[in-house]
Every structure is written in C-alpha cells, then in structure tokens.
Length: 433
Ligand code: NAP
Ligand code: HSE
Image (cartoon, rainbow, N blue to C red):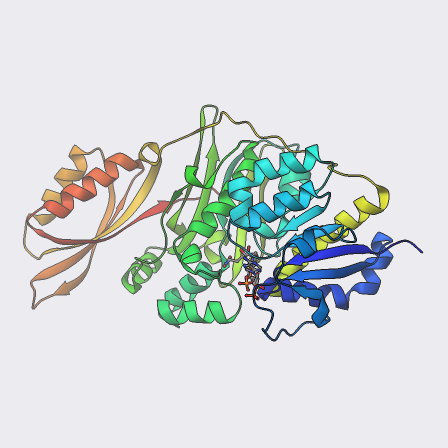
C-alpha cells in the first residue's frame, strides 16, 4: 500500500474547519484520483480550549509550531492563519524543512510571494496559493497556466466578497453599512480584522498578486493605489443608479509599453455591463488577452466552503506531484523593473457631488475652475434643494481627465464661497463593449 500524504494545518478557523470537513467528506475520491490518501497529522491553533466542529482527534491539535515543522510524517503544510507574521516565517521554515506548502493568505503572497516562490523552487518544493485570490474562483491556475499564451493588457475585477456584499445591500437599501458588515462577518466572509476588507487592503493584496501574474512583473501591495468604501453614502448609490451606474470596489490593472497602473477604489461601473451586476459575495475578474479576447471569471469570492474548494484542489494537484515525484512544473518569473504609474498621472472620468448656495452664478464659478484645471464637464444635474438652508445639491460627471487635475479642481471647488461642501468624488470606469 502507498503511504498516505501527511498534512499539517496552520489554523483551524473559518476556512481551516471547512478544509478539514471537505477532506473528510472526499477521502475516498481523493485517494482514487491522486493515488494517495491524505491524513491530517497536526493542526496548529492559538487556543487549545476552543470547541471546534471538525472531525479531528483532540491529540491532533497543538499550539506549538515545531510540532508541525519538525514532524517528518508531514509532507504538506497548509497555512490558514492569516496576517503577515508569523505566517510568512512559518511558511519559510516549512519549505526549509522540506515540506510543500499551500496557503490562502493573500497578504503574505502579495508581500513575500516572490521570495517564497523562489525559495520553494530552489528547495525543490511546491507552493500553491489558489485560495489567496477570488475565494473559490479558479484564478491563479488560469493566470499561471491557461492564459500564459496571451498578453494581458487590462484587468477589471471585484476581488472582495465582504465589500461587494455590503455595497449590494447598501445599493438596494436592504441594510446600512454597519448591519451589512455584521452579516458578512457572520457568514464567514470578512477578514479577522474587517478594516482589511472595507479599507481596500484585501483587494489591493489580491490585485498585486493577479497583476504580477498577468503582467509577469513584481508588483507589491505598496504599488497599488487604494481607497476603501467607508465614505460612500446612500445618496451616491441613488444618484449613480439614476445615471445608469453601480458602485463597486473595483480593482483595476492596466499595462502599456512603458508602465503599469494598479488601483483599488470605489468606482461607478455601467449597470448594464456584467461587471456592474456582480452582486453579494460574488467576485468577478474581467480581462483582455490578445489571443483570447475578453474573458470573465465569476463565482463566490469568500466564505468557508468556496475557499475550501480552492485549497482542496491545490492539495489534489500537489498529491499528483508527490505521487509522481514531480515539482515546480510551471515556474514563474517576474520582472523586477516594471514602472508603476503614480496615481496623479492616471486618467479617469469622475463623478462628484457638491452642496452649493442656491443662487445664480454658482454653476459658472464651478465651470470656470474645471476649465482652468483642464477638467471637462460631461453633465451636471441638480438633485435636491434644501430650502431652509438655501442649498442645492449638484451632481457632476466629467470627461476623462488627469487625476492630478481632477483633485486640484475638487480642492479649489471646495474653497469657493458659494460651495458648502464637496460631499463625494468617485472615479468612473466606462468599460468597453
Ligand atoms: P480565522 O477564522 O480567524 O482563523 C484563523 C485560524 O488561525 C484560527 O484557528 C486561529 O487559532 C489560527 N491562528 C491565528 N494566528 C495564529 C498564531 N499566531 N498561531 C497559531 N494559530 C493561529 O480566519 P479565516 O477566515 O479562516 O482566514 C484564514 C486565512 O484564509 C486568511 O489568510 C484569510 O485571508 C484567508 N481567506 C479567507 C477567506 C474567507 O472567506 N474567510 C477566503 C479566502 C482566503 P484559534 O482558532 O485558536 O483562534
Ligand atoms: N475577506 C475576504 C473577502 C475573504 O471578503 O473577499 C476572501 O479572500
């Protein structure tokens, strides 16, 4: 009989528990398909007293990392803890101890993935990370392998299930920000620290990983311009809908001959395009390949079961490799010299909402500032009038302008005496058919 593949889990929380259950439910199939069975030999957690709804013996749990790393019967370490440290050090040590590794940790992969991949390759070990981007949607595999013949120029994506769930609830008026976030946490979508989701950090990590693979460039989280969703208001959802747009936390990556642009921010996206209709916990990645043309991946981007789908798929792939004694079949390399365009030089359209004094000449003053800053106004609509305060609400859509010009115009508009408040400014991405 062929020996079982030994697993060491680092973390048995929301995702880890789903992985343990999925492995138990599929034990026979996994053995049949890979030629080897999988056995969880150790599971690292912080709190040994916690009651866990998983089919594992109490003796499997440990709070001592060396019990996993020094256990020679463990072939694969599966990291499902989250955070940069100690996860990064544990992954390094696991590889150095001769183990293959699987991780769902986008923060570690975005920050240290290039070094970890190099270490794994040099050590003759495999590093799999399908669950780090898009939850259950296959993305790393396709970007690494199936799309390899293409030059990819653009990626537009919704990469965070928690924020998409919150934005969907807010736009339909079903829930406010706070209760929608609480629901996302209850459903197991949110990061242990939800600021990672709502602040756009999680999407930025995932975009850094995808853009690195798409453009074969070493792109790090600090290269990604980032804005979260916490300043969006019900009025913006209302006005965007009337103008034919949804508001999504969009992750955008574009490459041309000179540089790449990588940014995550709330964005008005046409409602009649598929990307504008991706709702709830669903994520989507839309890309343009020179051979394939446009393609789109959609699926559940968070949640324990969808994420376990990606992790178990990685384990199956690794199981095949171990059984056949093959590793690092698809090596990756990333150009370290790619230039990242500063956000000030990015071009976009803009939506902005302004409360002004309700009297003649106000529009002309705002128009003059925009003209002087080379920001061309595409349309303006007067939305609300607050008669008691003598104020009116105006919504502007601009043509494409430089980010630096748009921000300068907004700053100057806010300083006009006739302007009470610039209530919001959101970038607009008009997708091509
Ligand atoms: P979680 O529920 O907070 O679970 C984390 C687990 O790691 C817990 O079992 C915790 O132990 C253990 N742990 C944390 N720090 C530790 C340390 N220093 N030493 C030992 N054990 C430690 O988190 P999760 O939602 O499962 O997420 C895990 C990873 O999957 C993260 O990288 C996350 O970004 C990624 N991910 C999550 C989703 C999702 O939908 N939730 C989707 C894709 C990827 P205790 O149980 O004792 O506290
Ligand atoms: N917190 C993440 C999200 C989990 O909501 O998308 C999936 O990576």
